[in-house]
Image (cartoon, rainbow over all chains, first blue to last red; front, side, top):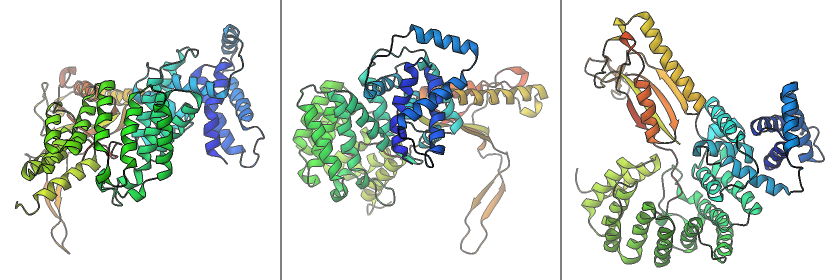
Length: 381
Length: 139
């Protein structure tokens, strides 16, 4: 039973139903029913044409669900209004589904859930587990999202930036439950990159691959955070890094820089260094300057201050930091680090402790608390 | 999305505006209060923002390890001065503003005289479990 195959077929089956005039929400339900049926039937009786089988069964499920005369008449009217379906590749179909699921009328949380379900083919339970909410809550979130996009016409291309934002949200969610959302985000971004020729799609894919390549080294066996400089570079996934770098270089060669490409370039420079000490911080600062031009984001300026501290020394880093809004998350952590490098251990310890109090997640809080404790040890209580 | 814990207090929160002990309400007022909270939870499930909610009994004890081979110490029922949690609800929302908005709504549950209690609710963000991808960006 090839679940990956099933999931990869989901978006194009869904699109066929919608093209035949099925309402998006009803079509999505019918496809889910067909997937359940496939899981039941295929192990004993595998079909020759998997997609054809799914389309047939899903269409039958859809007809079953909307069998009243009224519903049929409405559907037939709608099919008549639709232009005749022309030849189109399944990758184009999938692309439209991406745009629909990331539609700006949806909240980010709904867009993420709908993308995972309709494009990714995950079950509601898997998505609920990944986001640690009850299945009933996730089911409602998805059905509201489906109702919202059912009113959206399925005919014009959407905004690539919105789709990329949704995929990056999925990637950053990490994983819990039985689905690795980072791997899932990479799979979906790969699909998108195959369907659309856009340097920022390539940039995001490269960025995800480069980050993901370091995942095994990022946490110790006890779950604690390992900072970049202390990571065992032997545990980085060199194949992913190589792939990410090639994808990035191809994208950069087209000279249409965007923020994902710039971020990926920074990640690539880190991945390229054989040791932390050999990191090309000067070039990293240059990329942060590009990023700041593209986004004008205070987070970018904060990260730039760290890079400046490495390239030109902690005093220069602190000067760059002084220009960044101090209420920003991680501002205090960066200040602590730069003060420690500058030799002011008492200030660094105090700031680490304060940064721990402000940390947005457990791993970071524990890490920063340890940094404060390390500096305080031996200084008396 | 981020998760928030909304805490209701028996004791320990600042006094509510409509501060009448529940045993002085009419049975209908109590039913209306409970129904309000039930409807609230149901509505949040429909918007995809509900995670969990439970009520807690007012009785509880402090418990402490008392050394190898000895039973834990308890100090008996809570003294009058201790904070006392009455119940919680966990929500999963898009922003801190939304969490505050929902807590405000929950605080408007009807009490004595059918008027909103205006009780104080505690709103606490969850610490996320997983770090994000920005490991090269912070020390």
